[in-house]
Length: 201
Image (spheres, helix red, strand yellow):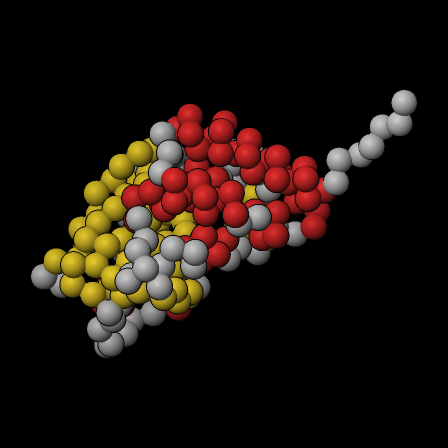
């Protein structure tokens, strides 16, 4: 009898199916548009060669230099809460992998990507983005980034408070963005959005 090794691409396809069945569906992520997007985009293409075997684990994959690919469940929940539409103009603050942008580009009409450093810069310009997605957990949303969101625009992000990370959603109204914490889950922290540390005595 001759044993034939499984081709790498077939192995990753099986890993994607297992991710959907054993990580997303069992956690309540069942929206067809989410599952289709995450079954289409190959996570292994967003990690270094030596990390490809870990691309589908249920934890974040470090990419080096503070970058990461978050766990599949985080992205599944982000997409489900955001529900990007073809008429959405989306701004993504990238955690360093580019994976979230690849998912959203299948669903939204316009996608722009920025990095955390640019996201923390103040700006006088008022934006017209209808959806803001942040690929990581933040302590606070900078005013400059909030300005780039149109009135009635939506936001989905990770939120960290006292060391606990949660998924959060919000909407801009009267120039202000209010965030509602949802499910507690493991989300890599974007330290560029940490609150300034004050003096303590």
